[in-house]
Image 1: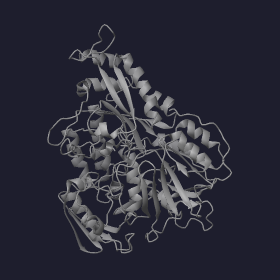
Image 2 (image 1 turned 180 degrees about the vertical axis):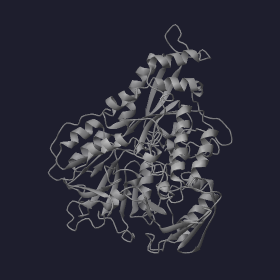
Image 3 (image 1 turned 90 degrees about the vertical axis):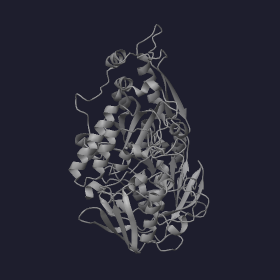
Image 4 (image 1 turned 30 degrees about the horizontal axis):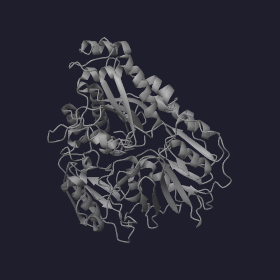
Length: 623
């Protein structure tokens, strides 16, 4: 929810807010079927190799992160930083090609549906080994899926992918068979980490097991998690037996920085190798700094305002303390009529974003939707005032809008304390809505997840990163994603439950024709827009930087002006080559674009293409 919300984690966490889980929501299934503080210039320290060469000579790649890890359990994790790390630790059945995001082999080397599309047979690779030396087989995948199907606590994070599964078996070590209740278009985009059965079958309560008590953590991805300290760091080492080839750095460290300026200062000093989510001011200052390269490219996330639609659980029980006036569509519409998206883009993001419209960013062209002229809610303060007047919310003698109960319209909005965009936009909202006679308290918290999950909010800054296949980010607004009871944690982002939206979701999930499915997804975006529960304000660029004296080359996704940080950062960290590596980049992807020292990020051309295509299609949080 707040990925930026968690960001997203909200995956339910969605609330996770910060999440903006770079959710890669279900990858290329259809294809296969602002202001920041200017940091004073200071010369780089004479020993910029600090982060790269530790005292013992290890080549260490250090990534600065600001989002907290919500869990290291693949069954619970929803925040962007958590899911990104888990993608490095566990294999999925398939992956996304770094060049154009089409489906490529992962734990499975091949897949074939039956004529009815109700049975899918996956061929599991025979060269994958768990980091403890045990062979990884189809039985591990079958156990993972069956556990999600039979234990609701194991379906917290990714249950939407298996809710349509009827039966999963492993007739032999290299064959996985999945039988479906009805066709499912995401079968080559199942973003579900496969876990080792011999480790996880010992877990009693999946709702409480956070997978962070014993290291190293057994996995079969390119890296192995070796250590973790809450809000301090996560350390990983290369998996020497990884079938795609071991990473070139001796260690990968995700280091926590609550303050973005502190992370940038660490980059300047050579204490970290990479920093994501730069403010415009930080990016501008770093572009003129020797030894640092800034990557500024169209992003895969959206940045939005979310309203509390009335928190409730699947059993129908309502909870939380959301403002009742926001249950009125007229109030939600008026608030959005009084949001100047152009100012958000120009003043807050300072041009490093595109004005928001539909739920899926323009980067994902086939799914990108725009409202019609008659449907579009444009910035019009006078119209917003009229909307409120007609709905019976008039100003009193003090100039305050009052509800039908006679009480002033005073709202709260959840803000991520570590996100300068939230804070800056919050000030604008106070001004714009204040002119309407509406009060707004901006609650900037280190932890927005707790009040979000409890339904104790009126509005929130939200955001998610979107995968090549949008199924996951679409699923978090279905009734099925609500928590089972008020005490549980569901996969919902914002407690939205709308029958019309759910019907469209079911249809797109069962549609294998790419064009027809894309049209259904656009209808879902249209419905979500009309309900007024989500106001997508912007599609931020991926603005990030790394030290070229520590990283010789690194893969972006996609090839043309893509991002490095996020769930698809799998390719980035696996392919990264140390600056003093003399052997070339033999472990980097053969299809991804490699940004090396002296390479140029084709930003102008990329942004031009981005605006020109305006077609498809998710700060840090959710992922």
